[in-house]
Image (cartoon, rainbow, N blue to C red; front, side, top):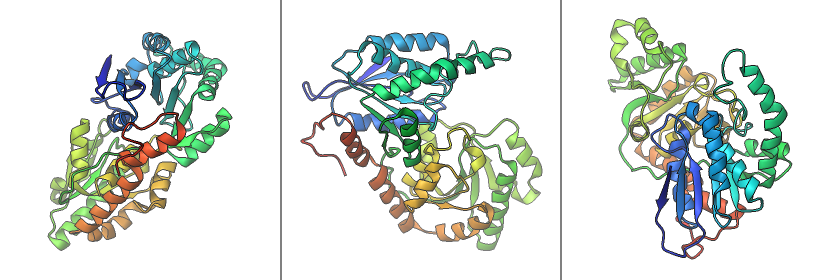
Amino acid sequence: MSAGVDRPPGSGPTIVYVSKFPPTSSGIGLYAQEFVRVLSLFGPVRLVIAPPDPQRSQALRAALRGFVSGWFTQPGDFVHVELSGRALFEFYLALGRLTRHRGAGLAVTCHDAPSVAGSVMLFSLLDRRGLRRLGELLSVRIGRRWERRLLGACTAVFALTEEGAAELSRRAGRSVTTIPHVVGARPARAKSPVVFVPGYVSDIAGILDVAAVVDDVRRSTSTPWTVVVGASSPGVEEQVRSRLTDGTHDVVRFTGLLEEAALLETFDEAAVVVRTSSSAPAANYLAASGPLCWAVASGCLVLTDDDRAGARELEAWGLLTRSSDLAGTLRATLDEAAGSVTAAHAIAAEASRRMGVGAVARCYAEAVDLTPTAGGSFPP
């Protein structure tokens, strides 16, 4: 499926942008919604919308369709592809582009570093008991060669963390550029006494610890703090509610899976965000964290025990606090959050300075042979 973003005629090469887009359960859809604004600064953009469901993108039919789509891209176009685990439609589209138009403009962003696109020959028909081993073996013996070929021939390869870029560079034997996880400008607004625990959540004990601290602070300060829990694994809500005491049932609210607009609205509302390491996929330990990036973009005070590269790099920028004792640190964070409009604005401003559209566009321009259409300037 394709769509266009209109630009003035002759304003630059057509940029073919291949990604998932909202609505989707993948955080890449929300990322792409903002990154298309970066690309549109360089020329007219045509969207190729990948299957939003990872299961559909992993199907052999989707991979073949992606390869054919890439084969028929125009050599004068510049193609940018978002790659992630099980995004086989996108991976094979990039491979089809490279196979027919080697040397033509092609850039990829690897979201799940140190992985490129997971097991690239583990198609859905092989992803089952008795056949999964074959799919993994093919992915190692053949798929890894295709990955190296793709990364080696691209105009530019991007990763969303410095550590991810270093590892991919080592594997591919070429330079990989670190590009910030783009975030859009969020509206300035007063925060509510909400502690948001974004999903996917499976840590029952962690939710109970957060609820206990919030309930204690609510009783001692009369501030009506509540805990909002995002998408969670099956059975988590029932188990949490069965263990809450009678007086704390109204402290915790579960939202289930939120569509992108509602998710951003929840970040905008929350004064505090607690992100547990159990909510972070272990495989992509060098990846950025979309929930953490959107939390700081919305000016939240963020607390996490996530030890992945993305969390550590945001901590180095002074945008969040990492602690191995989330419950113990949460009380001080709640005290700081009370009426901290100035702190929220400062966090959001720094996040925008480092990860906003203008900052990402400047980084992108240094890595690709594209000229900005607005007289060489980018938005602040």
